[in-house]
Image 1 (tube, one colour):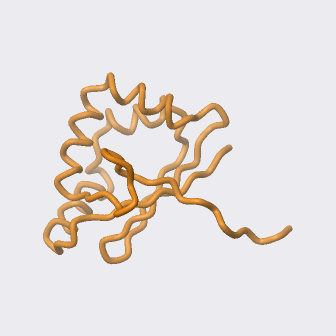
Image 2 (cartoon, rainbow, N blue to C red):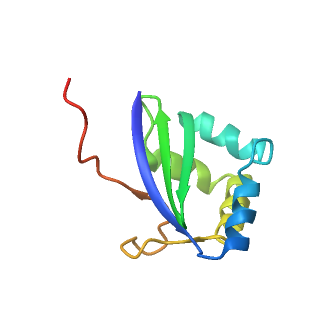
Amino acid sequence: MQRFCLALDLIDDPELIAEYEQWHAPGSGWPEVRAADLAAGIQDLQIYRTGNRMVMILETDDDFTFEKKAAQDATNPHVQKWEELMWKFQQPLPWAKEGQKWVLMDQIFQFEK
């Protein structure tokens, strides 16, 4: 299993943030998007928010890569439509690359075992 943490900002508008959360409420997500995530090797996906900053935690199988996921998403019309809808609410982090949404975070600490 692999674990990744990514960050992204929402547009700082309380109405848009509330609508974004409605799209992510239980039973509101698109089953085709969930199926695409599972097919790419994502086993669990969690999103946390404070203010307009979000952190997403992905747990994936050992074969998962972001390149493979991007290639699969590029040919999936449901995922493309979902991502287009989500851009209504999202804004890139100031240090994101052109066109980049979620930015992979670096792990800087872990309990020593």
